[in-house]
Length: 335
Image 1: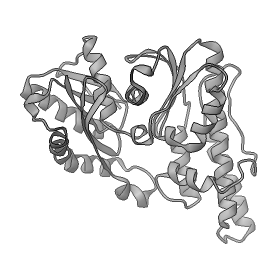
Image 2 (image 1 turned 90 degrees about the horizontal axis):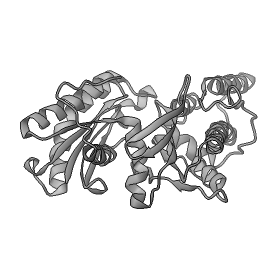
Image 3 (image 1 turned 60 degrees about the horizontal axis):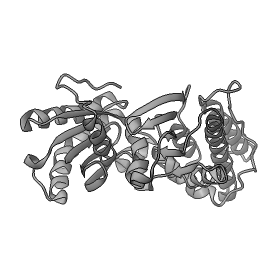
Image 4 (image 1 turned 90 degrees about the vertical axis):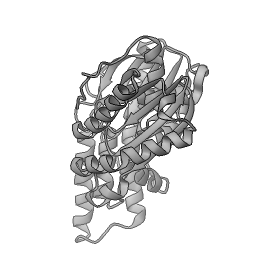
């Protein structure tokens, strides 16, 4: 069964063809990093215009790479929520047009659930349920109890800034460039993660929610203090590395501790990781070490499947199709 996936929830335009849920025939992504670089973050209007320009050429190329035509498709899937509303509308409108024209089913996919499916796409039948699923991205930091590919109970979410957003803002503050996650991950390898004792916000006892706004503010004040003391002279690379490493460690500490807390509450067989920040090397290492000896398997996707892409959308859609979860042409995008 061949399903076409479309992903336009933020600043990546992606189209993929996946066979029987797990075999990726094509997965093309048009990135917009260059367009948003000078702003240090995603500008919605620019993102939407780029989606309009990229979507049809990417669609054509995805079909050629998969070695099929539109008439070979059995269904079309699209991310409908959450995301930037204008960006979502472009993908949803294209998917509706294809489903109506080709007279094939339309399948609506939740963006965060697709990120969880990235682990399934990598591990296949070896991935067992139930499992905990930690989705860490620029817009979301969420912890789910996943009973199967299509069923995810939200256990906790960010109350303010997402981890990925904090990475981007801190990277911009330190002059490390955009996107912030890879930039901080890179320079943090040169730094001391214990150099600056930044706060860890665990919220009230037993909470599985997240909060990173206080940490971001703490980094801002600390940085301003250092620069001010030096009469606005730029910090040496070693101090920047220590700052980045200390910030990253504070984020990772919270993510790992919340996951371990959830493991004490819910009996599961594994922990799945998803979202752009899931490619962070420190998070992957710390979480893997924490799961050792607990008889809990880590289900981590490769970095290429951590970022927004349409293969995880089309793959998840296959399982939704098997359960009869189809959408009508009246389905709406939701921010």
